[in-house]
Amino acid sequence: MLYLRISADPKNDELGVRRQEKELRALAERLGWEIIPGVAGVYSDDDRSAYNGKPRERFEDLLADLRLGVVDGVLCWHSDRLYRRPRDLDRLIDVLEVHDTQVQTVKSGIVDLSNATGRAVAKTIAVWSEHESALKAERLMSKHDQMRQAGQPVGGGPRAYGWRSATINGTKTSVLEPTEAQVLRDAATRILHGEKLGTITRDLNERGVATATGAPWNPSSLKAMLVRPRVVALAGSGKDGMVPVISEETGEPVRAAWPAILDMDTWQSVRAILLDADRRTNTGRVHTRLLPGFLFCTTCAGPMQGRPPRARRMSPHGRWESGRAAKYGCVNPKCRVKANTLQDETEKLVTSLVAVWLAEQEFPDQAPPADDPIAADITAFEAQAAHYRELMVTRAMAEEDALPAINLVRAKIQALKAKQAQTAKRRTRPLPSAEQWLNLHGLTERRAVLSDVITRIDVKPGPWGDAYHPDRIHITFRDDTHGR
Image 1 (cartoon, rainbow, N blue to C red):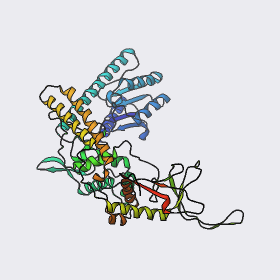
Image 2 (cartoon, rainbow, N blue to C red):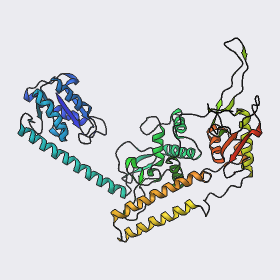
Image 3 (cartoon, rainbow, N blue to C red):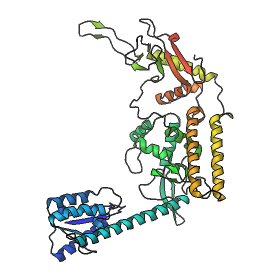
């Protein structure tokens, strides 16, 4: 049987493994070996490394067939096509010793695993093959670090959504893909207006908007696109390029060579929202009414949920049961006296009271107040980071000591900015006027405004038969302890 492998085949044209197969068939003819007819005699791992530890499906199939004794010989182009790590060679030896199977190669001759000397030679070659791969990986990592420090794209993998390759004045570079860039800008705006990632990705899929690979949109991939430094033309490192690269010379984030899609203020606001540890995601519920999550029963302090209307119907006992209107009701089974209120009337009342509250507000400037303690802490940490940068630039502090300290301070700054964004969403997402609120029809947008305006709505239980009364409904507005 033939074993073919090539580590990288970015075009998926299989030209490399085809060249190997041609030479292996010529070797089999010279040796007088008969190859199993059809694809059953060819095991091909195209575009698959033998060093990085990822499974090689056809190599595993080869070992399985060798254990069964189906064949008595293996041909490969070079021994490092079959194995590059001693652990894979050990597995191969265990199988070949049982069935006395021969291994022949085009470039490295016979791989004799039948005696101690042959196995020692094979293991020595495997160790040096692994060493070669490790050195190559280290050189590549060093090159990538250098490219990131220069703000250059590292390359590899699928095309980044929002950009495309172009050649300008003979130089290959990245330029914006206008339609895709606008998709990301719109998604960022919708996040700032309180929409969920799942809602946005469902809408993109329903509209037939394609991703860079043609796969459907999902919340995780959209989140990654919006929080990566790449989207504001900053070089990124770490897993999936999520961490901004800090310049070894200036201690500042490295500006990248490609154009930005989002401005820095928008990106930092979106990033603070999406990376907030307290943010609820994947709740499993798509709200169809305005007030779930805001209404609470005053008897047990438990949440109230919507109950659908019910038409007049005949009971199993032959008696007519009266219908009921849609209500919000306490869902705590241990509550002694549950609160209930009519849905439509309660939503109208809350809508009108929020409009009155909005009409009375004098919206503050977008900047945080001068006495904001969080802003003061951020300023202090930024001064600390600047101090470390100065020590590093003047060689008063070694780079290996200064860079971790700078990164730690920057992490604290990011955490404070996230907290600041949560407590001051009105600076990120301005509240509507009373007129705009009354003309706002999207349920997601209306619930987002409510989350910025009120903290809770308490409903008192009423006497039997009293399904709704405005005096039993108490709204607590943000920054308003008296309620309304």
